[in-house]
Length: 306
Image (cartoon, rainbow, N blue to C red; front, side, top):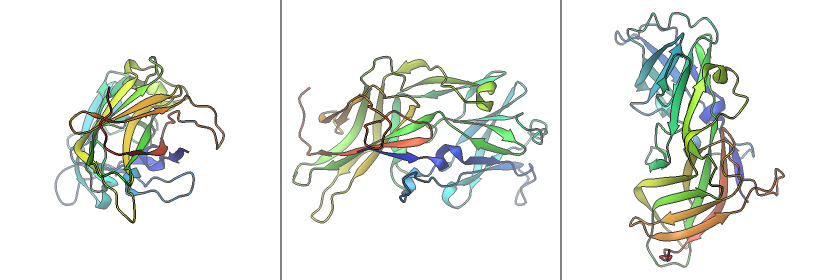
């Protein structure tokens, strides 16, 4: 059965700590720091490093206050990239009111802002890329928002992950390479991804689900480097593929189509509509700030006619 993993590090406890906008001792840049603690699991099992959210070189955030939006970019990171320094040089006036609670609103990835809102696009074309902890969804994918409490920001999100798990059939002698995976909701009106506009009122009180514009009920996850599934006599490794989706998605069930590096169909799976909230019920509805882990599926590399 599927598992639900709470993404504490990805969202609920992601903290943005402005270090009083002091001068960096090693240069003349003005900086603030963004810190991310590790994720934890609600089933008390150990979570591997792929469940950490880490800053990447070039990451940008947008901060909005009193109708003015400023962009900040990483200039360095500490060990593990859980804490990063953002360049705030020349923006002293903009950050002058950090002592006043709930006056600054931060968005990731870098958003399109107007006076009172920010729009973030969650794409239907997602990329699985290499990181120092193993393959994961690409940077600038997972949407987050926050407001300041003094000089600290605590991020939240209305998105979660669906984790597809694949492994090669132990007896297969075929080469099995995953080039892409298509996720298709059975409900044509299901809003898996799209454009979300976060008003400052919503950031202060995200109690309801926002409407999604330009939505899609299909998402394609492409592997930057095709993932070769391997099997051995002692073990049969499982490979993980994560989709970033809005909360509430997939309640009506979905299809999964796995394709090789040549675009040929090699896996075709189905999940029925969610049936309840009990421990034994099949409920794969996406929850914000959590990972829905689907049962492992095996692939032998056979081309499936379409």
